[in-house]
Length: 191
Image (cartoon, rainbow, N blue to C red; front, top):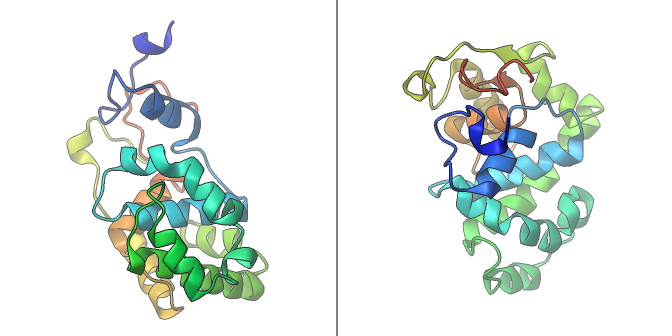
């Protein structure tokens, strides 16, 4: 069966190979690696108010300018770095989002110190394993859940920014904390 013949979640455009690859390879796959979790936190917070395809198109440049999403390097960013990033068309040029990334890197490292890994912290909200939903169509998918609200509230208390419950739920979907592939999608049983 070719890529175009596969049944995918309804949000994946049939004519967009970048979106298809993201859906087919990454979206919904459980992620326990702290660096990858941090990458998705940065990208999801940058996506606030924008389409995900906008972020996917800029992802490689984000990886480059944010030092491979290494929070230890990002916490060293200065005001001059923020000004430089505001001139970079390869990312979302929003001062609050850029500053939130630097702030969130500090908070991320504090959580790592407290829990050993950030993964242990965030996966603790779902008992360490993915929640497998059984959505039949996109209309059933929630924008946020009580668990996403609890995570967002706790992260906010820890100083994180730009990570409200809707963004946190998108993060949970992306990193496989929930399996929100629709039941008819070929990836539903694979992840």
